[in-house]
Image (cartoon, rainbow, N blue to C red; front, side):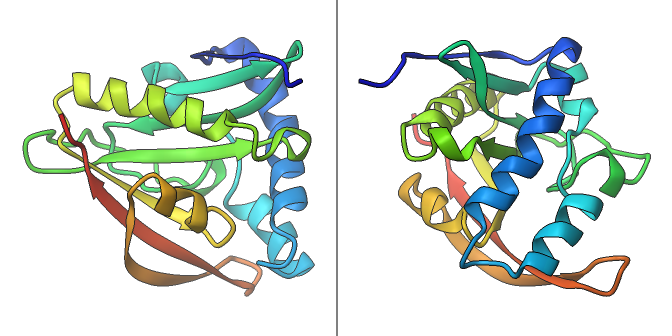
Length: 181
């Protein structure tokens, strides 16, 4: 029997656990989608906490069995993906009437994968984005994340290849969906 999952807004006090979780998630759940070189490069240059999400109160952690089992969030800011190490200093707010809220930085500990962690975080994100007046959602999916986001009703908009600072190309899928209700 699996432990109950509790989703709550992340705080600065969660950063150490988030920083530990992200590389574990990427290494454990990217097998078969990305090469080891792509995984390590993406951890260095792309994946990491975006502390603006925590400051904005739009990032969540999911706890199960007394530990952080997953994290993820949404944003009313322009950045589509990437941790602090990948962002520009300017990250302006979006207009909910004309732009899509961003679904951001979902990571699940491999030991907790496929147990509803990401779904619980996603539900919290959709409710918050809807309450903020957004009518649609957009994200940049990793290859292992694309099937999950399809189950949430997202559809691919474009395939993207980003060449990281060390010359390693990594593939993503930009996806979008409307918020109903």
